[in-house]
Length: 245
Image (cartoon, rainbow, N blue to C red; front, side):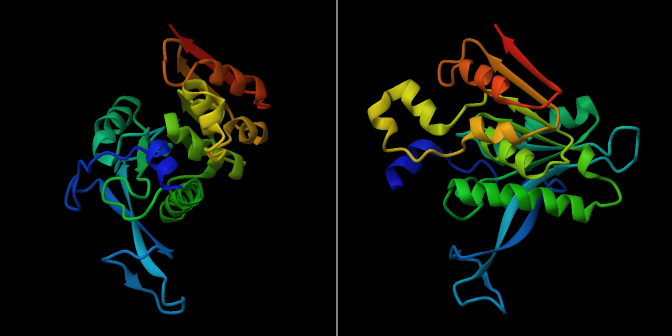
């Protein structure tokens, strides 16, 4: 299992620290069974439970305008962390005038833990619920959108399937499933050893929020055929597929 996780979850060397991005880097607390060196034992839980902190970036407007109650939840690509995602998120925040939040994956950046589908999807839901509750006077479910890129389309699609009232889903270079990507690149035999994770092709059938899918036709890692299949599987009445040359 360690071999496939290293191949699927390609985490870079951390590009930021605890004191980076003052005023933007913040934390979500959660109870975890993964033992963290700096973790705090939680009373009321078993002795192995620790209080883990998930690092997130949160770009937010302090002055209300017509559209800055919109929140874009960004799930970054592989081989990235919050540090390398910072400029992209900041650019969206400034150019579109919306709030943007980015979540880290376990084992990436300064988030202690080990990446797997279950934990990443659980964190995605906690990410949404935390910001909706903390800023309940600003955000509403219909003003929150999920944006996923590459491997980030997995948790983004999961969130849109789980939260039916989400404002919308935006997928950049998505895949139908991790196993299919492996099969496309390495063949059917290696793919059999990869768990069928992040089954976007199935999850998207249960999404009825607006969906926008964008994919480059020259993408050599994830074929744009994945996006075409996801578009065809999507039952939303408001969906759009953009294939860029």
